[in-house]
Length: 469
Length: 148
Image: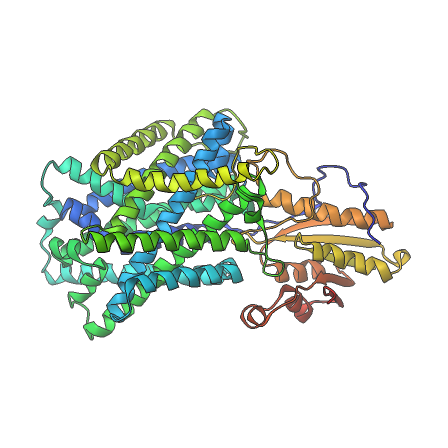
């Protein structure tokens, strides 16, 4: 009974098109992605790197990330497809090797990000239940989130919204504590301009910016939904930049508040730095209860971002499998759940091994800080990708533009490239050992590629697609 | 009558369309709308396993084009069967809600959907798309299941 006909002319557009992502939805999507990731995990590290003035590092990191966001907004409105950075770089350079490299970098960056977020989660979890080993918590956490992705809960707009509101409420709580301290007159504003880290304050700031920049990652996930955004050339830039600016403002205020309430040394030494702000006992009511409530909020915030990063991993792998860059098994879709289950299982295994290797290493050398390490590794990849995306935006000027396409300020874009390269240089010089981790993750990608070639499948196009880190 | 056929890009959805054609009277079917729904926030917003007209440029992974290609494959079946008017509608959002909405908007007389072999987890946690559609559809629903 199957009759195959081709009466439908090739490429006929369908008669009806609807898009479902509104500007407001996209704004909260960006805000939720950006907010959860860094501040709960990294604020202590940034404070340690800079000193009381670490809010300046947050401000600079946020600004640089937002400039990169401008380039993303311009490209996503010109080419509203799901592929993100690898698409843009491919369009600009037409170099298959470079495109493949970018895809592998994106993939590695999300692997590293998931790992460091899971560790951050375990720290807040440990503040409530201190009997469970942290490694077990991180592994169970990652496996559970993979299951959630398999079932498909990430599709729920409502769940996304609720999580974003919870994230914001946690940070508002920190700001309220800061305001109370200021109103009481207990605040020592000189903290806000003090650099306690030894050496040149400029270097301290650069170090802090690199970490704060990590706290802003997540915005590039918005490029994935560009295709489904209503009136993208207007809505998309507004929502993306608006979301990032809002997140950036919240970060700077949270950083100031934390610096005013808690001594910087305490922040830098804390496992879960924002808990120290709550522990300062400023709010009425029991500190114990507040600590628990806040730890739960922090865990939800981290969960939201980790969910998105797991979606991103498996989507990139799906895209690569689809295009025969990696074994086609990665593009296998579960018959009823419609999730790329092979890609999901594989990325869970990678993140789990990262975490286990990290644990083993820290037993060998207790000084090894895995969160910091994974964060730097992610930053190396991201800075490379971001710089290249901005260059692509500049290179693609004059292509695919329409009357109403969004055009980012050119001078700002040059500034963004420069900023990204300076940071990249700093991170590599400051922490050459992170290059080993970078090499390890890249080797995994190359191995995937070689396995595919050795398996002798269709001749690989050598070009990667997929979602975006 | 106006028949609305949903596809999620799976082979099962194509089989559902074919099953409908195997017993329905083509003379009574005035128009068919093939509906494909993209879920933008899902891990894979639309997975097309039906092939069809896909772009060659591998960096252009476009879920919208995938949905359009899959809908095209199903639409071609109906055109080959002899249905005078075949529409393709690419929607975006939650699949069940969009299918029901489109059926109401276009006054469909029948919705054809495939149901996977829904396990306990999805029935409790989310409910299969087919289940949700038949729960709130404005017209009769034909749910086809894979043969065991």
